[in-house]
Image (cartoon, rainbow over all chains, first blue to last red; front, top):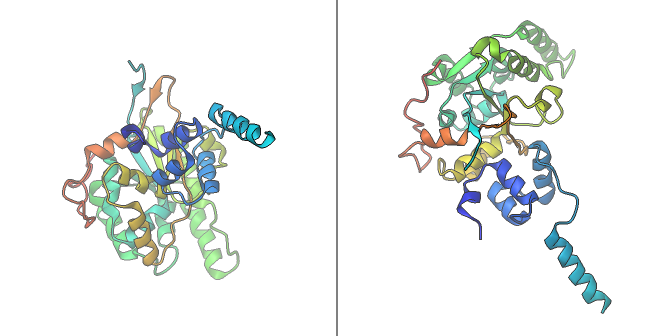
Length: 72
Length: 226
């Protein structure tokens, strides 16, 4: 569930929260009324929000689980 | 406890795009939600009327003529004559893109010379509609001014509860015959170390009270500060 703070946050803060892994891309798109993921990345670029290229700890864990399931 | 010192945005610099979009749907009063003076460069003002029959032309002229309810301030720049020459070339067909970049150049010039007009303490926010300005301009990369696109500005006004729906407004602009560019940017200025700045607090302070239906009316006359 989105916090009250993020609902009232600036677009830059929302993009930063997404890149920090605090909210998902769907939430970021919904909050900012952005239609697509490429547009969301473009918004980061235009807003000087650094785009994370490494997997987050949660994503890393998910990949490990999926790879583990596939290899079993 | 936060150790940040907070300094609010003190003036708005408007590009032609947002002005034309707001005029197209008779919502110039939304500029008053900034609660700060709006500076428009002479070239940008003329750009608004470069194409005869521009959407909302009469409303825009009225806004300029009445100083935007004491909110708008014209900034004369050294580029107006060059722009007019370029516009003539463009209108004659000699050079179809002769005026390209003139408005952006004047805004760059204004940002560079802002201290001469307004003092060193001013913090500017540039309201723009497309990526021509900002994403690659060396001056903007120094980030002395906030930059916000029309879309993200309206989106923020919606989330602050100042307007009911950004999507509806963008839809109205489209219905009027103008497409708001899909440029989404909200770039904070880098001020002094340890200092943060934003414009949202001021927007909430001047939030229109009885305007939830979007019928206009603005923020009680807006800022009268020169």
